[in-house]
Amino acid sequence: MGLYLAKRLLSLVPTLLGVSVLTFLFLRLIPGDAIAVRLGTSTVLSPEQIAELRAYFGLDQPLYSQYLTWLGALLRGDAGYSIRTGHPVLAEIMGRLPVTAELALAAAVVALGVGLPLGVTSALRPDTALDLGARSFGLLGLALPNFWLGTLFVLLFARYLRWMPNTGGYVGLAHDPVANLRFLVFPAITLGVAMAAVVMRTTRSAMLDVLGADYIRTARAKGLSGTAVVSRHALKNSLIVVVTILGIQVGYLLSGAVVVEEIFAVPGLGRMLLTAIHQRDYALVQGAVLVVALLFVAVNTLVDVLYGYLDPRIRQR
Image 1 (tube, rainbow, N blue to C red):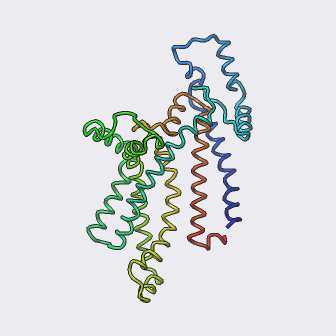
Image 2 (cartoon, helix red, strand yellow; image 1 turned 90 degrees about the vertical axis):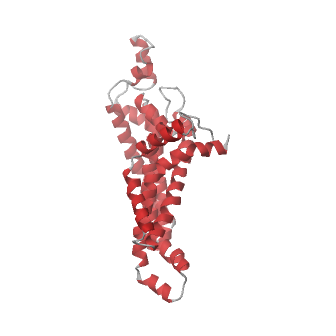
Image 3 (cartoon, rainbow, N blue to C red; image 1 turned 60 degrees about the vertical axis):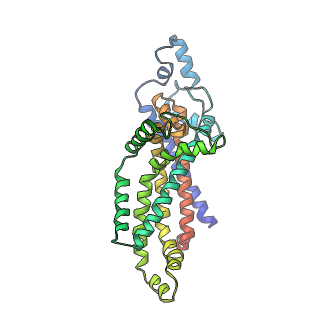
């Protein structure tokens, strides 16, 4: 397992390097000047002062020099400073990351809490009304865009029913856990519905395949109860596929959080990233994208480890 994990961790290096290069280059392709966007129309500086600002943030250097300077500083633990606020980028990211992580975790709980039982129950009772309802939920969950569902929740539960504030109102988990969870309920449902549909469909399909296998019939022939057959044999083998899908869906959670955080005014990493892109805050965008990529590959590495645990043959490859 140690060698398997070392190989997986080593493969992260080229992935993160590729993400950093692509993010750096694509950001520079966005039309507009970062300093001009930062100053806006209310601040008037002389050309010499603007040139000094460009030199301070290293924007007067060639692109390859800017990238190598940024990468070298990053390896020393310095991701640069935000053009917008002047604060260290890592401090800004670390301040927002817990909010997004909490939202993604809550969405994953919604997805697993809804999708897994529905998928198992649907597979155990195929072609029944329950199965039809579960499959309908799967189709509906995949078809509904999260920006539409989020806007609907805001209109219904904030404007008409007043179960949640119209805009903002986020409270930290440590400050007031009840208010925090109450605020995150609808963003988590918005973000988790599509993932729940994927988990339900994947679980149902995997369970149907496993329930028809010879070793399941053998287990039943030995007199094992239906619950024991499902929990000890069918569900464990079905989870191999489900865990793989979950790793891929983490990317959906992190990218979908950008839209959901903007709709519900959640002060997380996604909302900060969107603002930073609008304002050409290069260092902040580069740092935030790299952190999201790092989380994504870290979760997928964890999924690979779980995959190897559930199926020992994987570790031998």
